[in-house]
Length: 404
Image (cartoon, rainbow, N blue to C red; front, side):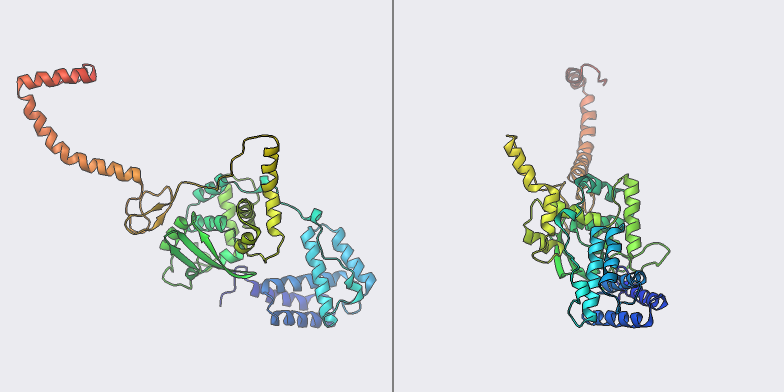
């Protein structure tokens, strides 16, 4: 059984050990462990269990009493500690949710009065947007991929950029979740809202090149992203390893922007907000239908406002072109999809570059013609009259520079 991208099961076990080593009372420790077991039984993922455990330990150390004995004054002081502290709006929101969730569990599903007052809604004006200048440009993405010196790293960045999937969804991919077809490939990812199919086109050549060189490519259950260095050789890459690949690529490409896997998701969502409906955005990015996330990225992209302002000012404005780059090259022999800069097919080595194919064809045609031309010219030059004719014609053509 895979332990997943972030090794959350291992982290969960470590968090429980930390719980019992903490300064909380025995009653609180036992209660929290029962709460975690109940959450696990209800299908809560290890990642969330780790968050719950660590947060309850931290909050318990701030409370001046036990969770069971805490009342309105103690809870208000706890909430104010986080509201007034240096925490993001989303971190404060999550802490409030955990407080209410835990006390509802203690109170058999109902919020007691001393936590019912806590408002977990984030106001629209408090939702921090990522600025357009912080997103990656197409040129920056292409450059980051280009500077990678291993096909695995090129494929990883290309898939993150085109899929816009969560790092856990991309990182947990196995070979059997990738299905190649004439249009590229379809990747089936497993996320928060279940599994979904993602169509990839521009990332396909890099992905195919890596899969052709994958050390365990014949095993459909093998992780797509395997370690290739000395440490944990041929084992599934962890979050730290993937982040390191991105950091190295950004450094080589001299990209001075946020350097984390999620920046690719932000960028892709902002790009597609111009073209997809909210329903399509929710489906593609794995958000529940009715989520306000699509509207957030439409706001970032300025999709509606830009177009209206240009019209108001009488500026000529054509429809925004869908992003396009040089087309992938399809091998005429095996139909393999290769990158736009490929000279030869990655699968069968057939020439896929039209210019190279024409050059080789011309060279192939010229060689037998040269065998005919050389003896024929030698024969003509033996005739004095023909030699004079050739000399005169050559002088006319080349300005008299040609010597015979």
